Amino acid sequence: MENTMKEIKEGVSALDFDSNTTVAGGVRDFYGEDRATEDQLVTPWTFSVASGYTLLRDPHHNKGLAFNQNERDAHYLRGLLPPTVATQALQEKKMMHNLRQYQVPLQKYMAMMDLQERNERLFYKLLIDHVEELLPVVYTPTVGEACQKYGSIFMRPQGLYISLKEKGKILEVLKNWPEKNIQVIVVTDGERILGLGDLGCQGMGIPVGKLSLYTALGGVRPSSCLPITIDVGTNNEKLLNDEFYIGLRQKRATGKEYAELLHEFMCAVKQNYGEKILVQFEDFANHNAFDLLARYSTSHLVFNDDIQGTASVVLSGLVASLKLVGGTLADHTFLFLGAGEAGTGIAELIALEISKQTKVPAEETRKGIWLVDSKGLIVQSRVESLQHFKKPWAHEHEPVTTLLDAVKAIKPTVLIGTSGVGKTFTKDVVETMASFNEKPVILALSNPTSQAECTAEEAYTWTKGRAIYASGSPFDPVEYDGNIFVPGQANNAYIFPGFGLGLIMSGTIRVHDDLLLAASEALAGQVTQENYDKGLIYPPFKNIRKISAKIAANVAAKAYDLGLATRLPRPENLESFAESCMYSPDYRMYR
Image 1 (cartoon, rainbow, N blue to C red):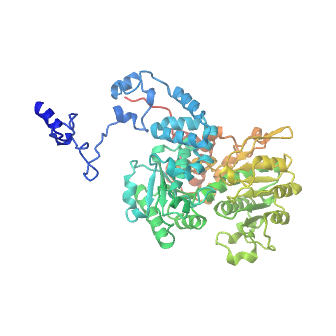
Image 2 (cartoon, one colour):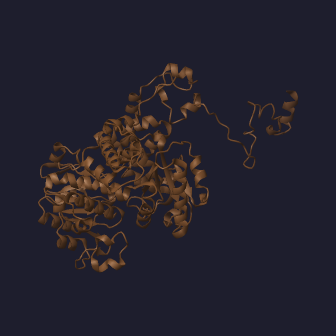
Image 3 (cartoon, rainbow, N blue to C red):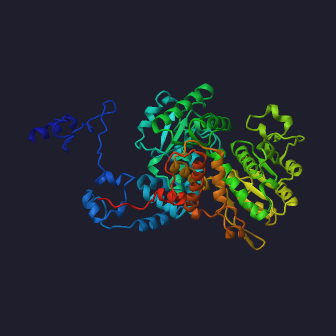
């Protein structure tokens, strides 16, 4: 000790001590971590048993103060928690109280994401029990702002990031994910996030949000869900110059380089997870979205929510609206503002449903459906210059350049906005719709709220309370002329969780258009007379798990009828089977 004190007094560094005993007089540095510098490699050793401090940091198993006294003894938690034992219900009450203190939606979003990383079951318990309050927080519209600011709020990585740097190694990257029994992947390349444009790598908020809804609304186990972002760069100059941007700092890859990366990804997914892995494409740009769906729909279980999910939920609302406006789908004329993924996807599913009902070929039923793009009404004289997915909608008509003139010329009974551009359903447009329709159906579907073609208040005011209105993002109830109008929400969250559950529980290997029609019919069947009395064409979200179970059962039944299902024998009661498959967020007791 005297010699040691003498060395210190003489200015000898504490790091010159015998490393086999202690470091700086403390506990023995067995792995040499405290003595390492940036250029000295250290192996990141850790524990593999979820006990003690490790258990409290494991979001899949952590229960916080809900660990009882026996669990605290069995899992070495004594002293690591305050003495109080709190129920999950009390934890839920406290979390909701805390969330409601926040005035800024993005703060609520960040608090929910933090909870998901700390206590997975409590996160889903909150989301399930308070779905109408929290859905706008974890999904649209707040998720749009979260994606825009993802680099700034990024704390813990969620999901897999596959960039051009991983080309040739994608299968290895997939194997890095800790969960092996994956059933559904939601993937984006970030090029067309909601109505916000190219957000590159920061689009990860969309797959993360979608998969949280797969679990909360559809009951798919969170451990079987994998969010993925394909990072091929971004053309967003603001992001490229943002010091907090988390993606590749280069212009977006296209052509052969892009196609090869996506093909390697699709092959690796199937090789790693098998034939029945569901791959849901999200927020790809139009040209890539249609190409990917066409290329892989015959070899993989793929689903594009922007094209097919949106189409299914909108068709459901239209079928339900017939109870209010009368007639059949074939009796109505449809006009779309927006001819991209959503617009053409919805239009095609409407045409297929009318064809199914009337036994008239889809080529004929398309003639009652008109689309307006940035250059005006899509007509036959423009066909040579149209993208391939717009050509089926080029009908015989003189050119029309504005939406208002198209409304006057076509006289639609249903006006649908999928343009991604806000305030495009002007007062003149809506009043013209109301001039020749007793109950004009107006669907302003673009997300987030700021991009809606018109607000609920505008639709009800300009039609003097006669509109049948639904939007993509939520709007508050509107009072007009002494009446309260509750706007519907044509939210894809009605469809894709139940649709995905139906595919998974039946072992379906391919998506067929008839499965989308089955989902639409099941959702439309859930609208009650009480809902209709309020002007609603969608059921309330508070019953979403029951709704998802019915959708899953209807989808699975159609899959069995078409010979696409592989899970045999077929369950006797598909709805009961769907409910039995659903994940429960209630805490488990540990032994």
